[in-house]
Amino acid sequence: MSDVRTLSMRIARFGLWLALLPVLFACSPPPLVQQQSYVFGTLVEVSVYGAPEAQARQAIAAVLARFDELHHRLHAWQPSELSRLNAALAKGERTPASPELAAMLRDAQTLSAASNDLFNPAIGGLIALWGFHADTPQGKVPDAAAIVHWVKAAPRMRDLHIENGMIWSDNPAVQLDLGGYAKGRALDDAVAILKAHGIANALVNIGGNVIALGRHGDRPWRVGIQHPRKPGTLATLDLQDGEAIGTSGDYQRYFEAGGHRYCHLIDPRSGWPASGMQSVTILVSGEHAGTRSDALSKPLFIDGAARLAEHAARLGIADYLAVDAAGKTHISPALAARLR
Image 1 (tube, one colour):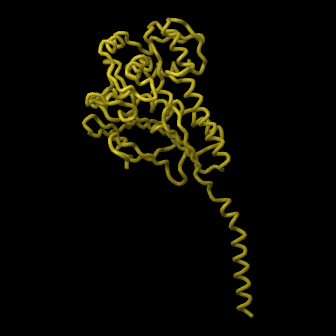
Image 2 (image 1 turned 90 degrees about the vertical axis):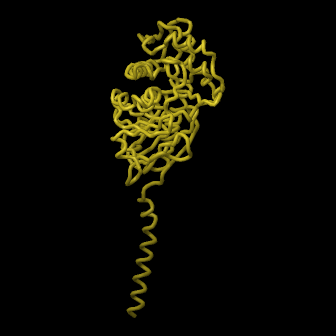
């Protein structure tokens, strides 16, 4: 009789365990929700952890819609608000601009001044001359006299005037290209959108420009830093909440001619693509981390390895990893302690 009673109790416990299964699974963390798209000429991926799938997908959709909006508004060579502004600047005309675009351009002016004009979104005409205003680079070195012409014209962000909703320039050579700014701005906007949708943990990756929100469960978000010449990564890094990494490299948009590699990162002092680096990655935290990580990797790439530490310190960047033209790796002490 006791055996029957024991068996009945075991069956009852088993039934209770089965009944609890749906509750246990309902209490487990929702799965990682990811979605990819193609914006800004590159692959983007948004990952959300720990939120119900419907909420996560709604938030991701809002982020990708914002990316698409920025892409079309800031396109430098297809019809956009920015290309219309460029047409007016070339004619020496004053033209109205949306408050959002005006704010972006003021921000870009501040970043340009901090970098001694090495981050220079005003050289869109020079970028076009090199054929990088196309989905596929033209693969041809421009005429040297044409390059000299643009260098002498010296378009700079300080030539731009933004006042009472109007924009104009003292220098008709100013042609704006925000390709080195837009992805970083998009990262910051993505974080704001995700938070507005109640998302606490996410990772946003725009072609290697990455920002972290919260954590990936019980660990930080882990990202890889791409090797500029080989498949795979140079190192991995755990990102803390609010941290962003930005990478500038000669392997992203380039062409080869006469045995030389010409990348889209042009030194405004010479008019030629920078050739002293293969890649520069910086880690940034705090306000506007995404924007600063994108914009400020450019001047470090352009200025080369010799002044890397000095230039990074002047820009307030303590964490950097760079590979110079000879393949030598340069890592700041602060970042070296965190790399895997």
